[in-house]
Structures are given as C-alpha cells and as structure tokens.
Image (cartoon, rainbow, N blue to C red; front, side, top):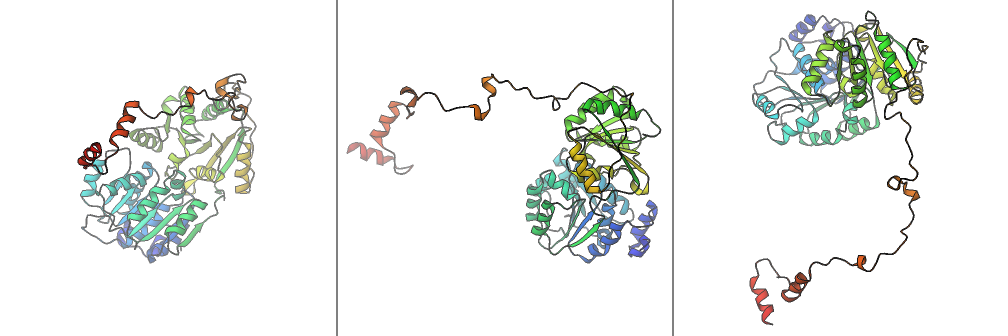
Length: 450
C-alpha cells in the first residue's frame, strides 16, 4: 500500500489528510487500520514517533457517526497531561471536516470546570487515569456508552504505577467494547494486562524494540561525574548552528533542576525545563517555547518527554545513561523523526558503563566513543549521590543492626508493670459490672439490690 487513498477513508478524513500534507501511511498506520475497523481487540507494538495517534484515530473517526448524545463513545487514556493536550490537538486536526466533539481532562486543574465541559456533551474523551476515575466516581462522567477504549503509551502508564487505577476503570466500563492498546515495549506487566482484560487480541508489531533507527547517528563520551558532564554539555552547546534544537534527558527531577541551574549561568534565555514538579502552565509554556524555537535547549525527565511530538530536534543528549536499555530507544526516537537526520549523544560515568553495555547489547551495535575534549574542565565538585558515604563507627545513633547485641539487663520490677487504668475505675467496674445492652438501665439497679 502506497497512499492514504488506498485505505478507503471517508472524504472528510481524506480532506484533512491532504491539508496536513501526508501522502503515505506509516507501517503502524497501514497495518492497524483494518484490524481496528473490524472491531477486534488490538495490541500495537511500535517505536515512539511512528504515528500511533493517527493509527488508532483514523479507523475510529471513519466509523464514528454523528450523535447528539451527551455521554462519550470513545475513551483514550494517556499517562501525562502533556500527552492529553497533544492527542486532543491531533484528533482536532483529523476531525477538521467532521462534526465531532473532543474533550481532554487531566489532573492539576480545576475539576469543576471539567465537569461543566462534560455536561455540554462529548464524543471522544482523552484523559489521564487519575482524573478520569475521579470524574466517573463523582458521577459527572458516565461511562455506559463507551464503545472503544484506547490505552496509549501503556508501558509508561504501568511504570508510573497506574495499574490499579486502570483496573478500577475497566470495572466501570461496559463489558462489550473494543480494546485498543499501544506500547513501545512488551513488558511482563503489559502482557499480564492483556491476558486479564483483552479478548483474543490481534498483535501488530512494527520493528523489534531495540532496533536503532537508521537515520540517527550515535556517539558517546566517557565522563568523570555530573558537573564534568555539565561542563562538556556547555562546551558542545556553544556551536549554535549545529546544536540548534537540543533535548537533554536526565534521570530524575533533582538532576533536572541541578543541571538547569548550571546551564542557566551560560544559556539563560535559550533554556527551559520540564518535570512533574513544575506547574501545568509552566510545563505547557516550556514545551511550546521549545517546539516553536524560542528556546534552543530543553532539559527533561523520561516520563515528561515520552510520546511528545517535538519536531526537528537536531540532537538528543542522554545526560544520564538510562537504567533500562529500552528507555534509550525512546529517548533517541525524539530526533530523526519524519525521515529527517538525527543525532544522539550519550554521556556515561564509570558507574553507568554497565548500563551503556546493556544498551549496546539490546541494539546489537557498539556506540562509537569520542575522546573527551582537552579544553573541557574536569570538575572535582560532586553531587550528594556521588559523594562517598561517611561511616561514623562510634556514633551510637548510626549503628548497623548486626552490631546491636541483646539487652544487657532485665527490666526492673517497677517497669514491668502493666497499666490497667486508674484504681477508681477498676473498683467501679467490679461494683456495677457492664450493662447487658446499651439501653438496659434497670440491669445495673437489679444487680445493685442483690
């Protein structure tokens, strides 16, 4: 199949595709279309950046008839607020010539505003699991009309601990529905979810997880520590022509803030950061400014940048080597999108070398190593995690459990007593006993006479 016209789309969808300038469907879009259209459960395994949103929305929109009913018929679950906004935007592009109501709901914003929007009626609801469940419990959102459930980036959702929320959502959905799931990796958790809730799903797998994208060049630097990595990054970013749009991945929120402060000394106006501790407005603004070219450098954690469609990124810098090799694939998939050339740079310390080897084994290639530049200063400053732990041998408050022996004395007679309550209370209990029932006031009187 060569063009979208051969997919047998409706005229309205074809007009939207033409407006967007797309001619050929990606492999996941081509192979998913007929499966989803058939109404069968489907599991799609595809690398990030392969057009998964269009893969499930094209067949869904093709069959979604006009309706005035208030309750949604299609539910799309995604792990982060940013992805809710992105998926809603993608659906609106495809539905430019279709009368369809799309609503995105997510945490961190006023729930009452979202309840009012739901009351106006919607056909497709895109949501994060937590906020969706809150709305369903409050009866603001009724799930009885859901015909199709889409779970996107399900591996990230399970990594974030959304399994129980997903199970709760499954319980309140109609039993007769089509389940569609997309994931970049097939983990044991994902497999368990499929076995529990999907009925004989068709699997559509595009590229083995771990196959490096051919249009991305990769290289790595061995670096001493965090602040030396920062010095190397500052040095590389000086070439503004080559490094014109750079996404920098760090392992956690603390590292993101620490690196941001260091880079801010040199690249103040060219820099932005996103992680889950930032406010929603701050995160949206950071992504928008980076995507539109106002900021040249974006520092992000894995979860925040997963699934985001950021265009024409010249370089992905793996500032921290990811512990899970699959995450490296997701990271470098941010560059080299839509058949553009991409570049990936990996920094690794001595402690991270094992993780780097695991990445190379997964991809079955060796990442070319670049010599550390002589002009870059090797920092002696260490982060709290890098500093050697001080063992205070004689500190009685920091002893190891195995150093503690048995108690060296028996309890004194005074300390071995058990508190039975005041003597007055004990005497009263002996005298009056306990009433048989709460309201039997005469019982005590009878006992007193005896």
